[in-house]
Amino acid sequence: MKLLYEGTKKLTFLLLILGLAQTPMAGETPLQVMENPQSCLSLIDEQLWESATEREKLLQGISYSIKYLQSNKAELDYQNYPIPEITRDRVYRSLIRFQELLNTLPSQQEFQQAIESEFTCYQSVGKDGLGTVHFTGYFEPVYRASAIPTPEYPYPLYKKPSDFDSWEKPHPTRLELEGEDGLGKNTLLSGYELVWLGDRLEAFLIQVQGSARLELTDGSIMTVGYDASTDYEYVSIGSELVKDGKFQPEEITLPVLLDYFREYPEELNKYLPRNNRLIFFRETNGAPPTGSIGVPVIGDRSIATDKTLMPPGGLVLIKTTIPYVNELGEIEMRQVSKYMLDQDTGSAIKGAGRVDIFLGSGEEAGDRAGVMSATGELYYLLLKN
Image 1 (cartoon, rainbow, N blue to C red):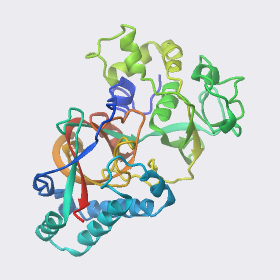
Image 2 (tube, rainbow, N blue to C red):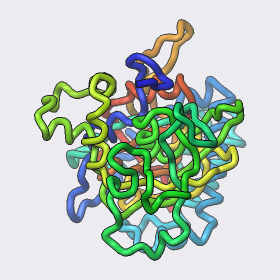
Image 3 (cartoon, one colour):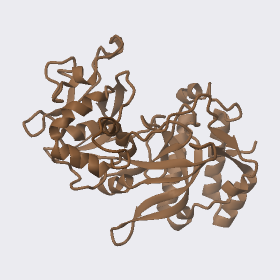
Image 4 (tube, helix red, strand yellow):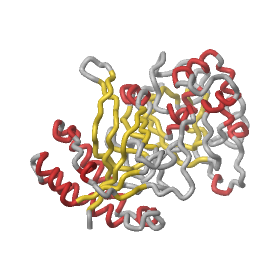
């Protein structure tokens, strides 16, 4: 099996593939206002003061969230938000003021004093009700692909069929749409192929991820993004392997999973169709990867959460361990506090105890995302009034 990232280099989809998503609790209260917000507000994002690039990235992310919050989509999204005091207007005003402070206060000390004076914190209750949040990473993969089907590139990604909105439910299964071999011959999707991949698992992983940059055989770059999906819940192939006794839960890791399907490629015919949720794509014409609120996500400054629980577009402060590449080209883990924007969601990002950090595009981002798995804390910053 020919993966673009060879050997055991990691892909971003660890928790999605292994089925480690958290199921939200019924009636869950996702955020609690902190009685003593100082423990949150005193956290310092050191990178903002060490790198002008990091400040520019955060300001860009803030501008994207502000644009979203001015939209009709945001108005609809906030109509039924479960915490009455967290409104679209309050989230919007908080971002505007934070942006002003970041642009006008020249020193870290002045900035921190203003934040501590004007803002308060809402903390995620986490996966245990005590604020423990599990952080993972995702990225925009880059794969090789072809604009036409060839023997080397036979596995298609699909456009949304023109009559998709009128399809009766239950929708056809993945097996019915792709066929057992994943080639999609003589199915409802014939004629809706968008681009072809050389590796069936790569095509599946792009569906898990929801977007990709594709290096076409003529040297050009094609970008694709999520457009629609069939009406099924996500099923992880890792959890299915465990269910069938192929591995114990503690044994299965992403490298183990990749090695298994390299050794037994015929097993893809058995396990991929168990995830009936099939993703349709559209060409995005070079646009950056876009989050669920409709704005670009920014490497190391955008997160994905459960949007049935968390305020979309909101300003967040996280405290966790994140992998970085050091001067020797080695990945090292660093404990950090960082301001980010809540701009995306994901199939496996369920409940108040799960956050996925967007780590950028390409191989280095993929290596970092593959080892990103840590606990920490998640806070939302809002103006006091």
